[in-house]
Image 1: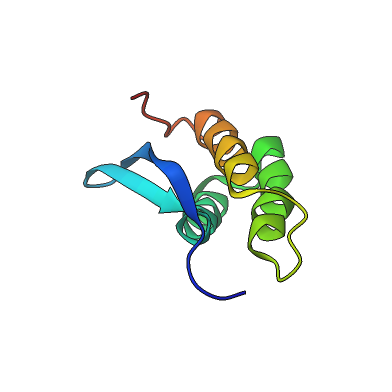
Image 2: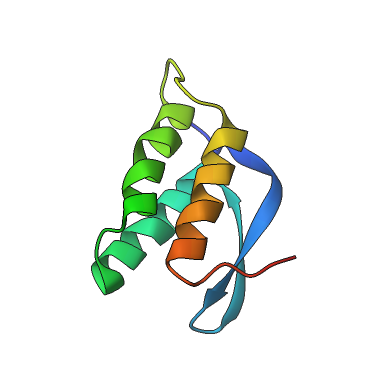
Length: 84
């Protein structure tokens, strides 16, 4: 795992200081970890972890865009997804 795995477009989420734009798989994983600390593990986050880790693995088992879609579903479930 090296470098950043950028999304085709950033994902906007509500953050303590406004809106954050998450642009890569690595940052998405960091954000989901903070949601687990704050809110606990949800089904969508649990499903998103292997997809995201699969996208950054040396031998990928998922794509960056699959990781982005899984992250969006997790953000919606955590009630932090910001449309647009």
